[in-house]
Structure formats: structure tokens, C-alpha cells
Length: 263
Ligand SMILES: C[S@@+](CC[C@H](N)C(=O)[O-])C[C@H]1O[C@@H](n2cnc3c(N)ncnc32)[C@H](O)[C@@H]1O
Image 1: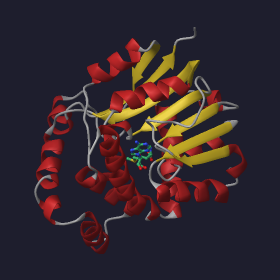
Image 2 (image 1 turned 135 degrees about the vertical axis):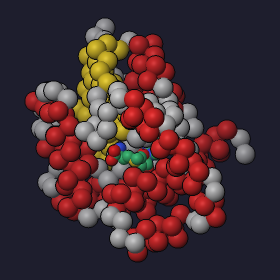
Image 3 (image 1 turned 30 degrees about the vertical axis):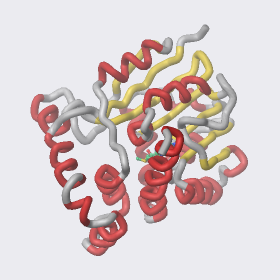
Image 4 (image 1 turned 90 degrees about the horizontal axis):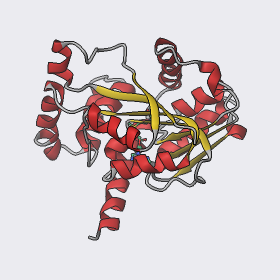
């Protein structure tokens, strides 16, 4: 297999895992996940009015929760791309049901090859996606390519270290090599684990890649590409700054908001 075929095969396998997961979301779970966008941005003191009339991209949009959130904030146009065909289908359905079909465009495409012009969007959100890619930095450069100078990017990736990953990998490289994904999903479903929790854990156990990064490394990507005002924002769930949390979560969930310098 040459490099291109390897990347295609990883993306295909990754997409197939998410095909299962996003179709399982109920409307209620979906709407709760949209509300989280508003709640967290308020918590992070990010002005929600800024999104009005902006052109936005959700790279790796999954079931479309950020596409819907950005449309609700009055964005002029919201693009979504994802390699999972079912995620794209589900996301299109969700935006259409909520009346945003005319202002959105969701395509089956990779973050390594975004079907948009250079400097064409004001805002990029890419959450939990490039860590699944064989070429995460190349994906970052692709996000940067489509973002206008003066635009904003929100990137989130997994941080390195911590007991949580140790436990995850213990399962990932043992039990999960014996029990296939479909069977494991059915077991969890039967045990009553809700779709959002299944999705949050099963993907880390079964996607071909789950890369983890250091905050320093990610900050370097941004500074090397002319970004300013880098802000790490955190979840309400745990705080990566305490010792206990560091032991469990390592570098935590690295979420950076940054502004692309106006040139
Ligand atoms: C953890 S989910 C996150 C979905 C969404 N960003 C969210 O936060 O709800 C990861 C998503 O990235 C997509 N994905 C993985 N690799 C991708 C790639 N190379 N290009 C585009 N999408 C990708 C998966 O299909 C999946 O929908």
C-alpha cells in the first residue's frame, strides 16, 4: 500500500466507525449538544454576536451540532465537511429539519482536502477531528488555508498522558482487538449506555488512530502560522490545572481559540 492508499484506508475505516455512532443520536441528545455550544462560549466569554453574518466552516462536522449552532447565531453561510457518509446525511437532515438548509452546505470530504477556496471563511471550528488523521499538522495547514486573515479558529485535540489514556489503551489493544466494534456497540446499547456516551468512549477504543498532543506543540502550530491571542478554554467537567486532574487526564482536552493575524 502506498502512502495515499494508506491515508484513504484509515479515513475509510474511521468514517465507518462514525457512520454507526451519529445515526444513533436522538433529537433530544442532539439538541442538548447544540445548547452546549452556547453555554460553553458564554462560559469562555466569547461574544456570540460575532458570528452574525460570518462564513463558517465546521471541519469534521459529525452529526452537525456546530453547523446548527452557528446557523442559529445568524451566520451567513455554514459549511460542514466530514468523511463519514452517514454523518453527512444525518447532519444535512438535522439542519434541514431546523430550517437552515439554504444557509448550509455539508459535504463528504476530508479535512486534508477541504473543497473551499483559500481565505474564504471567517471562522473554523474543528473539534476532535485532526487527532484521527494520519497527517494532523497537514490538516491544520488546510484549515489555515481556508481561513481569512482576521478570522478565528477553534481547534480541539486530545492532550497527552494521564491514567485515563492508560486505561483506554489497555482496552483498545486487548479486549477491543478481540471483540469487533459492531458487537461491542450492541453490548453497550443492550446495557443501556446512551448514544452520546457510547460515542464518547467507543471511538477512542476503535478508530484506527487517536493521536494525542502537548499544549506546547499545538500552540507552536498556531504561532508558526501567524495567529495571535491564543486562549486555551476548558470544559466544565474537569480542570487540567489541578494536580489530581493532571494525574487522571494528563494534558487534558486541549481546546484553543486563536485569531489569525490581519495581513
Ligand atoms: C469525534 S467526532 C467529532 C464531531 C464533531 N466535530 C463534534 O464535535 O460533534 C470526529 C468526526 O471527525 C470525522 N473525521 C475523522 N477524520 C476526518 C477527516 N480526515 N476529514 C473529515 N472528517 C473526519 C469523523 O467522521 C467524525 O464525524
